Image (cartoon, rainbow, N blue to C red):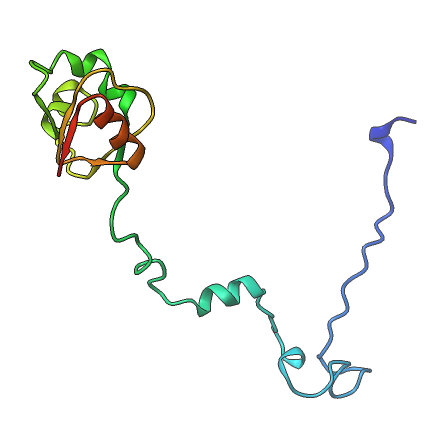
Length: 148
């Protein structure tokens, strides 16, 4: 005998249809009244219920008031990309210069923040950029200035 030759006896029993009169009496084993006694009853899952209770425009008011600033480290400012655009030691580093150096996308309108990752070996004059405390200390040690 081989596997394809095996046949199973069909023992599927038809599901008993409750609530159609017959031997079970008037309520047919469902009890009286309520959701569970009705035809076509369907109890919703709890997650679905919670989602429906939330307001329609959920998340609309939860957006942050300000977008996160674009982050640059001191190591990027002291890289050769920026040094080529610094004509003298007193050249001001601002959004335009960073855009020309390719450190920020062209036409970027958001805020830019300088963090203290890396070292600065020359004086930098920063203008219109946010600076972290540690980065400010490092820039001032190197002889640079920050103006907002």
